[in-house]
Amino acid sequence: MTQVATLIFALVASAVFALAQDAQDYQVYTESPRLLLNARRLRLLKRERERQSLRWTQFDTLMSGKARMPEPAFAAALYGVVTDKADACREAGDWSLRSKLETPADLRQAALTYDWCGGKLPDSVAGPLAAKLSTAAKLPAAGIAAVRSRLFAALAIADDEPKLSETVAKETVETWWKRGLLPKLSTAVQPVRRPGDLYALMEMIHVLRDNLRIELKDDAPRYFSELPPFQLLTYYPQPWPAAENEYRIPMYTGNGDPVLEDAALSRASEMALIAYDGNPQPVQFLQGWIMQDRFLMRGPFGIPYEFLWGNPYMPGLSYQYMPDLFHARGVLLVRANWDEDSAWFACIGGQMQYFNEGKRVSVNPAQMIAPLNVGDVTIHFWRDGMRFEAGTLPVPSGEDQKRTNVELAFIVGAKPRSAYDVEVDGEEMYEAQSDEGGIIALQFQRGRKTGVRIKPAMAASIRLK
Image 1 (cartoon, rainbow, N blue to C red):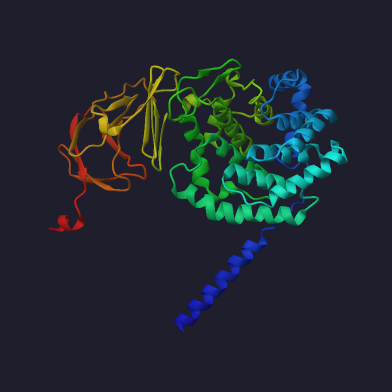
Image 2: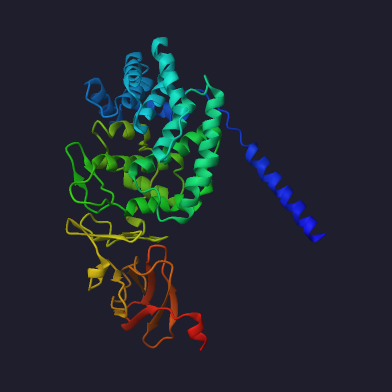
């Protein structure tokens, strides 16, 4: 009887799960524009035009002056839908028809053009463009940006091909998201690292919520709660001066100058995340970080994103009050302080960099002998039989409210997900675990100097003997 009951329970559970999946309606009922520009956001942008805000005037100056825009259809369609100018929409439509739509970025531009400007496009443009979007939406897509653009293409023509849009939306959520990216967000070390991919993900969470009431953020609450501090602390402290504005530069590898388009998309991702939900405290710190006019993107690539997402009226908190340390799931990011001449250290998935006095260097833990001190945090580099002295920081005075009596130390370069024996002078030995990135976090009492020894933990069988 027990086996029969178990079988019945399993069958019922499977049926309930199947019904729950079928309960989600993937048919699109919203009206155009439905991609990024819901009614509330479009009203906001039109009010920005009326107010002659800084973002609008810079965007208008470039568009009215016929500046060469790197994403011409995106810029022209945005300008057209806000100003109700048919010639700008026609310009976006002509570009989209000429384009072969061979890249995710170009397909995205064409989809936005059709969605934002459909009513202002002549039939000779709208019909062929819808056909191109239909063809693209029927093709498989790999990679976050490509999946985003395929979804955009399908939703843009939802009025013409509702079954196609429903199919693509369902495949995006049920297959690509739930079986593909979502498990990685829960287990991998920051799997969405490329700024273009992060921005594509931010666009998708907006579009799926606006049109299908699907909250992707609810499926990965830890990832999205960790994203704001990760973003802030992954930037090098010193800004990059460009001709049009200053840029915050996210951590990158290799020699040479940074790619400023990546810096722009990283900032756009943050503005889109704020626009999605500006209430959580980490997001309000992010808003405080974003709303500095010296970093407002004024160039031809960045200004359409700046105008689309920037909202200076949303309240924010000073990022100076946000912790300058982030450690979670194989990632360690630490600044000495929030000044722009601060020292900075990063370890992401075993890859390490150090920034100090305007210079960034890659760190090879095998070649590091002395620890690094970044503010009040000490970073040691793993080696067999390692010993070091802890408790060397002075006890904070009563005037310093930010510091505590705890001294933080991290050991990087250890074996991931492994146990280590920690011996502190005058205390019992205890066991510490390294995380996914081979990082061991330790705490000591400030002002109490003591010797520390660390070695791989003994096997349980040896301990028993």
